[in-house]
Length: 178
Image 1 (cartoon, rainbow, N blue to C red):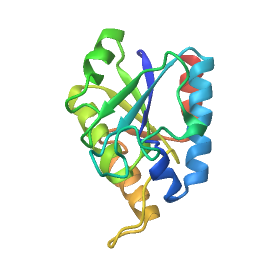
Image 2 (cartoon, rainbow, N blue to C red):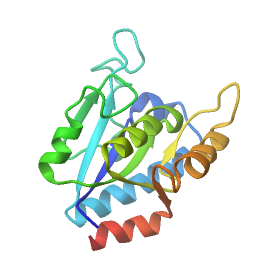
Image 3 (cartoon, helix red, strand yellow):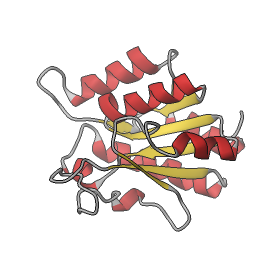
């Protein structure tokens, strides 16, 4: 496998504190992947959403901060974004190209918004995308539960179309062996 990076999208205080679907397992799994990536000298890149003035994700607010359990260490890149896709009007694509990255392990929030948009943008740009099971989450809405949204996007929309949705242990092996 070509060079791989772990991309942690929008794991921010406000979203985690609202208790999305399966949040404890999701955070635990993301922590495992971050630890594995760091130990195997793979880069971890964070993406943080700025919802604008007055938003619960307003820049520099408590809700905007990256959730402490998965926060970056010194030297890890944080990409600031204003749109659902981590690629739109950010330096992410240029940065990945400069590092020779061809594969992205994608985790974070929210499944049907920023993870979906980032997955499809990465796919359109030619990246191989890996989505570990139980590493993205979202909230119930008026149409579907967070659980149903998770299952629908992971197994019906993304898997074998835009990405490979894999058990977390397989992704840990990828991080350790490539």
